[in-house]
Length: 193
Image: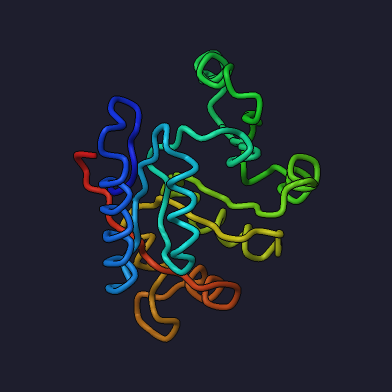
């Protein structure tokens, strides 16, 4: 995890920026993914990230405005989370939740309705093992206007997704992913996380 955090102290802003640039350079040099932490430092973080367009990764902590993350639409199956999510997302007018089964929802229609004025659409999900392949294959085969798909999945599912098509580990999702996109494992999340 790397990034900028101006929340508690801004004394070392310049040093934080220099450190982030150096760490991004290492990630670029060694072709490594990054996990970005950005709290109360959106503009500086985005300016640095723009200088490294080939580096892939995820945002771990993001306190930016809705202008930066124009719209967030979550799909949640468990309706017991309605009150918790309503309270948690109340301050964010750019975030909404659709309660339903991602396997049954019309994702193309959702994208057309919710993201018609947005130039970049990214899917980010934590997928349960039993729906990993169907969801990923559905997203790819629907040819939705997505810039990227970033998912957290069980280790074995990730390895199958990124396997060589001709290998013993390959499956239908391997072939689909290889046909429609480039797959890679960005990093491992330990059990204790």
